[in-house]
View 1 (cartoon, rainbow, N blue to C red):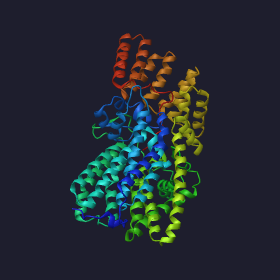
View 2 (spheres, rainbow, N blue to C red):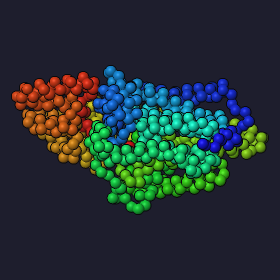
View 3 (spheres, helix red, strand yellow):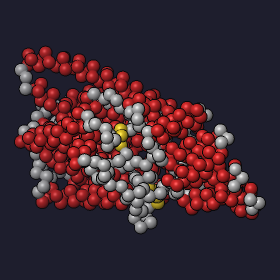
View 4 (cartoon, helix red, strand yellow):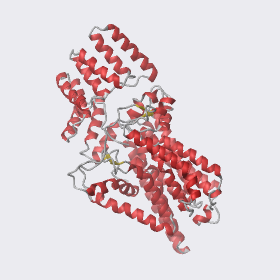
Length: 590
């Protein structure tokens, strides 16, 4: 049984805890301010950044299939609880508003849980808890997790992770075994919502250290064993899924397995150390100065000079580790805070897979609690070490500075919420920050084509090609645009290039089939659609297109069968929209 810990005695809290009315008033105020920051997101659209895969074109979510959600692998991720929660928001007609509203409610709940968690572990310091919760709730870095429909996994896993951490702390305080088991249940749910929750045992060790309980005694390790098993299973499943596995057919991949990936061969030994540590260092910096935020932070190109930020990143991270170790014999606030921050970012460090993007705002969501806690406790400790006259001077000064900082974050977060309004604003912002970001031109080009702004879309796709992005996405986009202009022969040339690069992508095959059909080459169109349907047999749109091609060949029986299947599939899954011109997304990892 755990040694009972008095949080009040441990943290040196004031003799009198704040009253319930005051605590509830603070909680209500924090929740209201948090809601006001994000309420503008309720009118946003789905964006072409995983929302298609997670919701708009996801058959198991659209069908609200519990079994399908439990088995489905989206891209390279397995998080069934997240899919189940998304399925609950599906409406007819499909609208993003219920999804965003639910994520906003979850974020407010997470913020209140941060308030309660910090209140408990800080020794019932309401001021410390309020500061941490308020900054967590309104920070611009957290907009991505809330305003983005596909960010549901962050707000959902954080809910269960915090519930589990609170119950474990209560177990340390009271020794009640039931708290340990409810903490384990919350850990399991968190891992099912997002595999990053596999770091829960590390959070338990940090809580042990914070309350000055030895975390590696035989008894402490035994009680952590079930949590380690859950974390190990989660890590194994995530690793297998990332590498294209389906656990012997137990899981259902909604998209083709990814190509094998590893360390980029063009990296120097210095790059292999500095680039993975850039994310944690920049996340810590942007907790203080949240400027230059966007949806996609690319790795620097091999010939691009490394900036000061890349070179200093390992120093920043090593300094955090050194301070955490140094503080073990002192207050342990830095030990807990920096440990929490780095532990939650550890699964995102690209030491093995170096491609795609180098960091993401969403990685700061739960990890930021550690930095905020360390900062708030440091200020609180500094004030308590002062004489009463000095404290009387510094308290209002710090209160004004804190209020100004919070107001600045409030304004920045409201602005960042608008970045996620739709796909074009999202990718225009990314290009404003990274003008040579080729994938962003592809995403924006697709949206402009869908809006009928073909000339602007063509400029975007040509810009991506000029930047060296010779991908199926670029070629497919160019093919669709030339086809819309009636230049079918040119369109077919581009689409042939796209199929050569992505022969197993149904959307690419669909677009080439439609072009071939328009050129009177119905037999070739049927061949393309046969291949596409072998990859996506439940697609109503593919069956309908093959029906048209078979009808052109005079195969009325086959055409009728395809049209019937298209109708059946449409009734089953609510007929998701057909593959968009230029559909297909650059390969990336979570």
